[in-house]
Image (tube, rainbow, N blue to C red; front, side):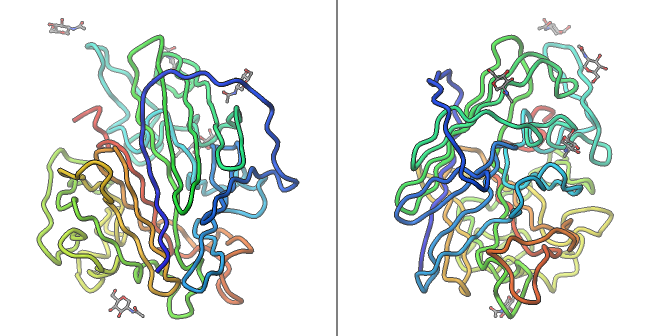
Length: 353
Ligand SMILES: *[C@@H]1O[C@H](CO)[C@@H](O)[C@H](O)[C@H]1NC(C)=O
Ligand SMILES: *[C@@H]1O[C@H](CO)[C@@H](O)[C@H](O)[C@H]1NC(C)=O
Ligand SMILES: *[C@@H]1O[C@H](CO)[C@@H](O)[C@H](O)[C@H]1NC(C)=O
Ligand SMILES: *[C@@H]1O[C@H](CO)[C@@H](O)[C@H](O)[C@H]1NC(C)=O
Ligand SMILES: *[C@@H]1O[C@H](CO)[C@@H](O)[C@H](O)[C@H]1NC(C)=O
């Protein structure tokens, strides 16, 4: 069993970096590598384009979604925030409103009746600056002017450093807001398929296993995937249970009638698009373990964040192309429910709850 580790600490502190003008390869991608991992990035959205790890046969497998053509990222009409940093406030802001110091601000409504990923000038659509790159580490920065994410005031400096060592990919995000109190919540939004869409038995994600040992509790959400303020507790083997034992399939509740509408969308969203709390995890404990028997790859997450968003790609509609490193002769597109995003972050819509 091969195993790689994601570590996702989010810190708030000021740093300064001496710029050196790092260079990408001919394909426009910056490559960092270690003994167990090769990771590639582009400045657009501070996006991870490829993540190669070894499978059970020692072969390199590209386990994340993306495009071969880096020029397609900004053109993709679906723009699923592929493996990027959607800031300055990720996920939903309920009804496009929040209040700070008795002033209520309106953010842009772009997802049903809510704001998603900060609206239409979000950080995942910006070309970040590369301020430092070595063989195993790369740092991107973004300067987000006041109100460039509509309704979010004050300048913000954002920075992410990705590094690899052994079989660990580490993500360190920092942001500072020197001018104003402003909504600020970051995540790294990578989509995984640990089989690289090569499993002949299934091109769905349901036969990946998921273990969330500290996440019995989840945020109850409405039909638009907005938390209601209630916290639910999943009974063993119920639809939102990934805590009671290791080895549960992501699709373990597929025969439950609630599964086909479990993430809202008027009953159209099958699977998961919700937030699981991480309760009482010891420091540096593995809080998420995603695995696939087909490739023999396991991804373990350690984070200092309060929980994770789990999204099982219901809204992928089969139009997006797979990379040449993925798929088979017959599987060439990203089908519905064929991937999973695991986003360590603070409580969704925490600013209003
Ligand atoms: C907000 O309003 C409350 C109630 O009127 C008041 O006590 C408080 O001082 C106000 N806070 C600020 C930061 O203006
Ligand atoms: C992010 O911004 C882009 C560019 O303005 C926009 O097309 C896209 O819809 C935005 N994403 C979301 C989730 O609103
Ligand atoms: C990149 O750096 C340049 C020069 O300092 C600056 O003008 C620009 O705003 C930066 N871009 C981003 C996305 O922060
Ligand atoms: C922020 O931008 C929006 C348009 O994008 C504008 O309606 C609003 O007045 C601006 N707010 C401030 C405080 O400048
Ligand atoms: C796939 O997952 C289902 C549960 O969703 C399980 O019943 C089935 O045995 C699994 N198939 C394989 C090939 O692992």
